[in-house]
Structure formats: structure tokens, C-alpha cells
Amino acid sequence: MFRVTEPVSPEDFQKIFDLRYHVLRAPWNQPRGSERDEAEHTSVHAMIIDADGRCIATGRLQYNSSEEAQIRFMAVSNEFRGQGLGRMILEFLEGKAKANTSATIVLQARENALRFYKDAGYNIEEKTFLLFDAIQHYRMRKTL
Ligand SMILES: CC(C)(COP(=O)(O)OP(=O)(O)OC[C@H]1O[C@@H](n2cnc3c(N)ncnc32)[C@H](O)[C@@H]1OP(=O)(O)O)[C@@H](O)C(=O)NCCC(=O)NCCS
Image 1 (cartoon, rainbow, N blue to C red):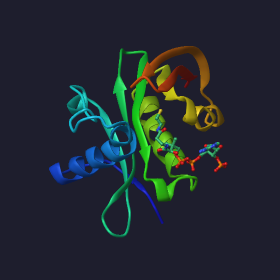
Image 2: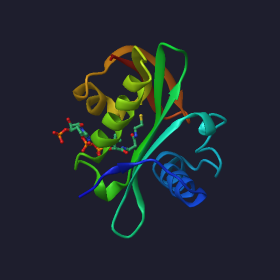
Image 3: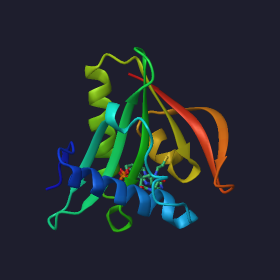
């Protein structure tokens, strides 16, 4: 069965960045490197590896303040969607935020992922930005 782990090696991080790139950036012709930011080293990373050693699901938790955590870069490989892997990643990161005594988790949801987050207990606060002139985002929040 699948389980969530944290990356430990540079190879693990490369697999995470590759999955992020293919799911969240390549379809909109964004350059390599746009799938990561300056908060990688201070964030919690989650990944699911398949039997062939590929990263098939990932997500990241960063701490915005002592009260607020933020989830970013949620991505599940196309052929593994709808099997509960995204939910596993989300719950793993929520567990980390709770252990850190964060009061809330905020995120910027793509329109296509709204139901995924609603079903996990997140509420829409505000319609926010249009990424790559194409993907409407909504700020959502969950109280822990
Ligand atoms: C959004 C995403 C991370 C969800 O991961 P997933 O593994 O497909 O989702 P899960 O199988 O864990 O779904 C959990 C619940 O979310 C809801 N859900 C997930 N995908 C859904 C969809 N396409 N439509 C409606 N509800 C959906 C369902 O309630 C589901 O529960 P159920 O299986 O009991 O019906 C994944 O589909 C993905 O990577 N999408 C493309 C990239 C993306 O949009 N990332 C989010 C950026 S904010």
C-alpha cells in the first residue's frame, strides 16, 4: 500500500520537483525552476513513492507565522488521481501543522481543486489571483 514519507536525499527532492513541474508548470509552458521557491529549506515536504521508485504525489507545508501554516504545491500524478493519495498528503501535512500548534492552515486553491479542499474541511475566503492568465485561484482556510 501507499504511504506518505518525507524526502531525505537530493534525489528525493529532485523527484518532488519533477512531479511539481510536470503537473503544475509544464502544461502552461512555464520554465524549469518555476516549480520551486526560496522556502523549500524551511518547509515540510510530503511524498508518496510507487513500486518503481517514482514520486506520484507530493505537497508542502510552510509556516507563515506562529499561528498560520500554508499548504502549497499539491500535485498527484495524472494516472493516480482520485485514489485518495491527495487526501493522504493533505492529512499528513495537517498533522505536521497541528504538531507545530498552528491554529489555521491557509492555501490558494486552483478552481479545479476547490471540491477536493472543501471535502477536506477548507472554506473559501476570497477569489484571489489568475495564475498564468488562465487559472483562477481562491484563498481557502481550515481551522485546526
Ligand atoms: C487536486 C489533487 C491534488 C487531488 O488529489 P487526488 O489524489 O486526485 O484526490 P483524492 O483522490 O485524494 O480525493 C479526495 C477527495 O477530494 C475530492 N475530489 C478529488 N478530486 C476531485 C475531482 N476531480 N472532482 C471532485 N472532487 C474531487 C473528493 O471528495 C475525494 O473524495 P472521494 O474519493 O471520497 O470522492 C490532484 O487531483 C491534482 O494533482 N490535480 C492537479 C494539480 C492541482 O490542481 N493541484 C492543486 C493545486 S491548488
